[in-house]
Image (cartoon, rainbow, N blue to C red; front, side, top):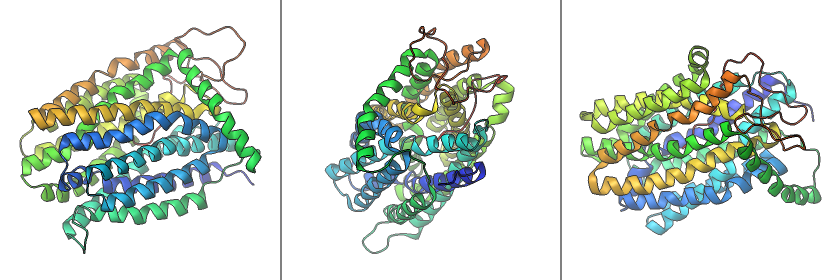
Length: 457
């Protein structure tokens, strides 16, 4: 099988990442309002949503190790099938128990989906050219995510405004559309993603599965050896908790201001489209932020800025003020993701890349589940605005966790962490060199690097 060129890898990555996030764009504006329509309180929605976080926590590392051992393509295909089952069930789920099953399946899907596509892109790019600057493609991926989410949100608002069709309510229509788009995405994945495996067959599959636990252990060992990587992954605890404010509570806040959930759902479609276009703009601006401030300082400042935007959503009066703060929040979010994931990628070698990206996601999802439950309880008892203010504080206090990455870049030690060797243990605050054949971070890079990660939910 011929090696894909850098441009071919990039084009396929952008197509697949766009199809991955287009359905999410349809889902985000309506999923909380739809569950409220089906009789759930905010606390119950938080508990149902927590099922996703619990499953991600349990499966994130095993599925990441499986992807590193078996291959990214089969794991992504399995993820797409699970997601299709989850969304199809969401169309008809009308009870708390069924909605828990929906979000549990989403947890399995997210554990399988977290990391393989991005890791495939980075490693395939390096296979085509070991000196390639993959950050540009990752940044373009962040922009593509924003555009796909914007298109999905616009379509979602249009479907809600179009109204009920047959047995499907207005808020259910975007979910029906997601089922169709998920099938399209699965076909595209099978057609476009090409992966070279050194072995094949049932015996190779058994060997790869048996290898997965060792891959997981090696990835966990990276955290013990790199204080920078540990701090970066710790950011996700605060980020995952705080993101509940603008992903789950913002629709409720807007419905509260407008006094009508269906009107809020219809308005959130175009508003979320604008927000995700702003997100794409934020992602495109990350190279400028990196040059001016450095990746780690810029990421820290953006954590504080995002907290401030959530304060605006909580306190500004009227739908215009709330939505302006919402859009600015997504500008910050779009810039934050590439900076953060670029810093993570610069701390790890290829053989463990998926596992480390999944570790990053693993800590975010349970934190998001905890945020959904705790902030949902606060919202039910003290009001949505109070819950959003708490989330804003949590987002902002993650900023100091970027200090180890900043110090490491100033010390000139940005080389990635690789597999443990028999050599003497490195200093815990500095990453060590990785596997042979995997290039270190570029000399002269004033930071630890900047790329673009998938939008995290």
